[in-house]
Length: 195
View (tube, rainbow, N blue to C red):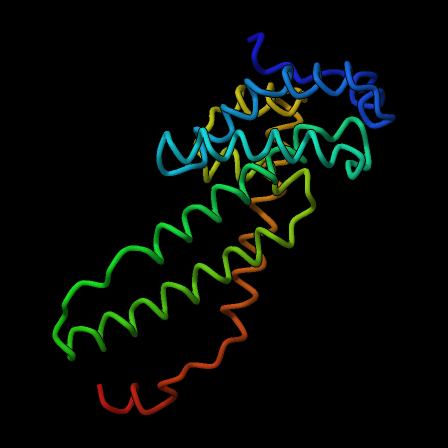
């Protein structure tokens, strides 16, 4: 796939040194990949287009902040992801709350709090992964890309992608099991005595 090839490290290095031609070529060459990331992450095509444009602007303005010239794909993925999340949060804030009876609101608020707690634990476990494992796990399990597509997008072999994915999943599973294993039962012995 031609559109999964990122601009080379030499072009990135030249752009970081301030070469305007290299910077223009870098932004142009990154555009198809950035659009693909945005389409897979954003809720709507409009948000995806806006997020891709914002990411390319950030690339243009802040290429000097990229520490390793070979890390362009993961850097751009994070920028696009953050922009899509920002847009999703704005969308959720702008949606009016439905009219719900007070008792239903209490039940749904409790259920929502528990869902957020679980989601927070999963997110923290994923965030604690090394960057290479986290990126593969998010692209494969959250975004649903095929293993081959993930390997190609990251410029690694399928075996390396599978290894990182396996290690990432195992680490998340262990973190979640450890978290739940030490969590006290809020009902305690009372629940057992009642039944």
